[in-house]
Image (cartoon, rainbow, N blue to C red):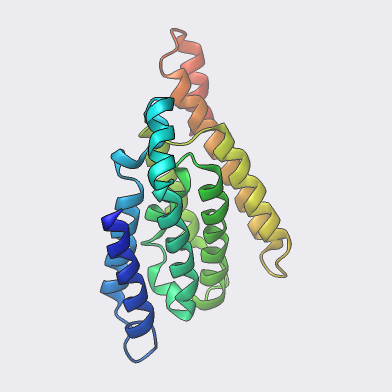
Length: 213
C-alpha cells in the first residue's frame, strides 16, 4: 500500500512536469511503466495463489491493488498521446504481462491498449501497417504461454475485444480482423501444446507441435 502511494506521486509528477513536448523524458516514462508492471505482477499480489480465507482478508483490508495500478498504467498510456509510438514495440511485452493476470476487470481495461498500439503504429510509422507490434506480440505471447501464463478465458476475451475495436475502425477493419483471428488461433495452439506436453501419446504431441509450427 505504501509503495502504491509512492507510485501515485510519480504519476502526478510525470503528468505535470514531463509530458509536454518540451520536457518529455522517455527514460523516465519507460522506468515508470516497467516499475508499475513489476509491482502489478509481483508474486505477493497474485491473490489466486492464496487460500480463499487469506484472499478475502487481503481484499477486505487493501482491495486488489493490481487493479488500481493496472488502471493507472492504462490511463498513463493514453496520456502519452503522440509520444506513444516511441514505446512500440518495447512496451508490448510489459503490457502483455499485465493483460495475462487472471483478473477479469483488469483484462478488460488493458487489452484495448493493444488495439491502440496497432492504431498508433498504423498512423505514425509511415508504413500504414502494424508489423512491429504484430511481430512483438506473437514473440512475447509464445514466451509467456510457455512460461505457464494464459488460459482459455484470456484467448476468448482477447479475440472478442480486438475484433470489436478493429471492426469499428475505417482502415484497420480488414487487416485488424485477420490479425485478431491469427493471434487467437496461435494462442489456442500454444495452450494445446502446453497441455499436451505431459501427454503419454507421442502422436498427440507431434500433432500439436505441427499445429504450432
